[in-house]
Length: 375
Image 1 (cartoon, helix red, strand yellow):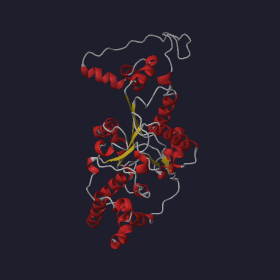
Image 2 (tube, rainbow, N blue to C red):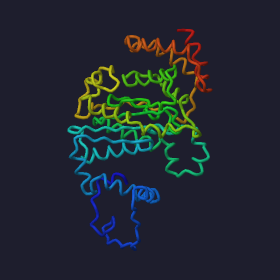
Image 3 (cartoon, rainbow, N blue to C red):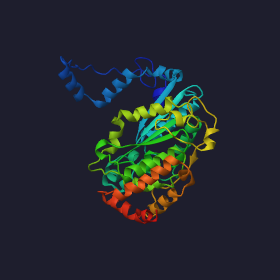
Image 4 (cartoon, rainbow, N blue to C red):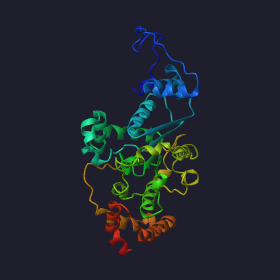
């Protein structure tokens, strides 16, 4: 349906979408507001669907010209949120195959905010609202938790195509997200030099403590092409929000810095591998040597993505976390990097001073105590 908004030609004036003569609706009197206050009241009272349609038509070219405008663009910036992420990846794949997008001459990027790439929070499947009130479309999102499902395989295939073609992808996870786990938002199962990851923390929830810095450290490892041994999967539960009292899923798209970060990743780095250290938003990134040798397009590096599937429906063993931390401490790529090793040393000091307020945080500290003693 969304693809047709770009590719379909307009129906002749006075006809419906199938080209048949359209019946003229009965004329209705439309009140004309006399001042700003009454105009705002009339807009608020009007049907939201009509408002959205009018706004879209005002901001977008007429349907018959949208494909032409897309082809003529120097830069194409796709912005998505939540379930819009898999939908947009599939749309970009179609547009590339149709020739309406061409990364050999266009910069193309997708900003995925709280993207539901590996499904929603697992415990929501048993939520009464989800089971009995939400639509079948909403329940279908849980199929993304299983890498063998049709929807997961279709989405991964689309990601493989768009990344191999050189499309840039920025994945933003949101702190205390009540709907999407962090590992899902940052696309944990995929590795590719054109993917950049970040975490949005709303000001009231920001603390410069052990947990915050540990997650930032793990995300930085992923951006550098270093495997985090699935630490972010295990930490996602600790920073997950609840349906009662948290709105991290929606606050992320109201932050201008999120959009600026994606634009910097798209515009200021000419290739994801060779130029990232000089021009990527966070700076100081280092990538595996295989990424440097990948052929580049105008948009980004053209190489196949690495996919490490995991089944989010399976319960996690929380006692993996100490072993993961001990493995990271001895990781050669970390020990050989002065900056990363210093950051790991700082985490040890932050751990001693950390006083978690939540049960999940206290459980995490308890499980990591043996590692602290060993270090």
